[in-house]
Length: 368
Image 1 (cartoon, rainbow, N blue to C red):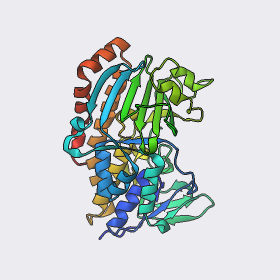
Image 2: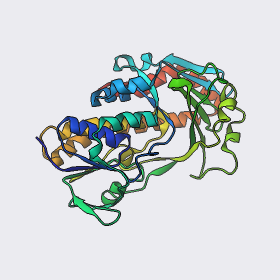
Image 3: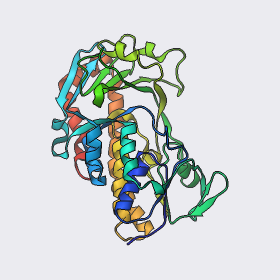
Image 4: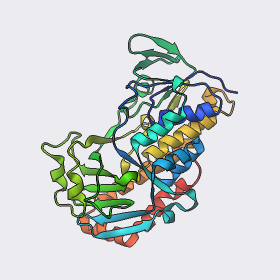
């Protein structure tokens, strides 16, 4: 059995999923997180496509997630006034892979946190640097040496900056705002997953959550990664349907400039990157969380083979590279399509929306 000493940097979704998978395989692990335990996650939502739900089952938390999640059975594409462009059952996209779910980020994090022995996670512990020999230096001056250091510490990964170098994540030319509408009594009829596409690259997405809530995601094109002046909600003032009523609750939405990682090598002797630390994505395919969860399960499987760490990491890179590259390429295709002239974009979606979604996701039906 591989009993290497492993440190996971980051107690987010990918870090906790990996810790759970490693512990289940009898492999010792420590987790450090720079933030406090309370308030660690954003109050936003997640759409979990079927490959993500399948991976959660593989990690052993599928039932617990399903108890807190809302099934998503349809995907709908509309114009900004709410006129239909395409709609289809998600079962026709994913087939036997399984169902899709929607959940709050905090609920998913809580399921994973509860599934991991709390003694392995140390909060308020920031990593300052990682050396080639596996020595990790923490804020305050303490240090430790590990056989494997896993960077699960997000897009601004300290592990990546210490050991991997390369370009910083690239701004995608998109800004987004995310919030959860808590009281939807005034917004009847919001179901499943619905994307409303406006002109000039604007999108307003709603995903139904349990408890009558709605996850709202809005984005726009921008030449700079900073929020525009004024109230962002005015950018969507011409959207119809339930959008105006939902926007009333979006004053404190979480803002982010969207970036994409350009590094394609996530392993080196004694270190590996997973999740956003390895491959931050455009949200177009909603595969960021899915790829992070798959990373966790595949890495745990390769480390549990009994191979030495370098061999296991080489196997991990080989298994993940092509799949992640596919998601990146499809994100680029979809982002280009949303920026087509509005009449051409709408015509394309009316004629071929379901077929395009099937093609985007087909290779992800296979196990990672």
